[in-house]
Amino acid sequence: MSPRSRRHATIEMERILIPAGAYLAGPDDEALKIPRFLEAQSLSRRELPSFYIGKTPVTNAEYADFVTATGHEPPEHWSGPTPPQELTDHPVVHVTWFDATAFAAWAGGRLLTLEEWEKAARGSDGRRFPWGEWAEGRCNSGVAGFGGTSAVARFSPAGNSPYGCIDMAGNVQEWTGSESGKYRVLRGGAFNHRAEILQTFYAARHVPTYHYANIGFRVGWDANPRAG
Image 1 (cartoon, rainbow, N blue to C red):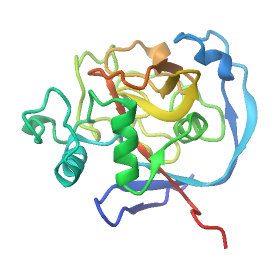
Image 2 (image 1 turned 120 degrees about the vertical axis):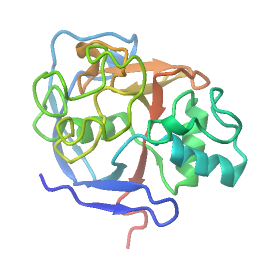
Image 3 (image 1 turned 180 degrees about the vertical axis):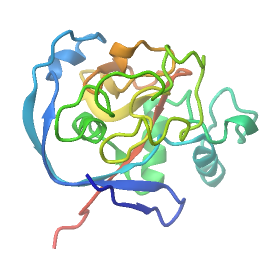
């Protein structure tokens, strides 16, 4: 697949076009009732229109621009509106679903649906990890032993998805715009998770006010926001 990207005019966020068409999806919404690893995949063919996705999770530097421009409350581990210097190129964490939604709107976009996230992570051929089968050294996981987030480009391009998306396995779990009852759905695995949780079809859920050191997000944009 040939990734096509462009930069957001306002905050220089690189985004990738995920083309319209079919993809092989993993287990259905039953997987969202409890966070768990599903031993067997039941793949189904689904269709999605084209959309744009952020090439990486939103970084601390990008989130700092948002905090400065809007006065939004910064994450709890920052010193005021400025992130720790050594973490500027790491994914922002300790953000609630409401924080992520506010940033996405400010960036002219929205949070991805759980289906969009999955297609961008696994491509059209139903792969178990963004790069194919499990291999060490391709993502920041519990196996890698970082013990925290890493720079978003640390495992690129070896760990990229078929479309060129970075960190869709490991580093941080990501909020999506999809709901499961009173909860919001997260996709992907994080730096403290075992390999099974890093699989492209894994989903978890939390209340939208939840935040933690291993949860971030990325932004999506409609490819054709205005018909005609």
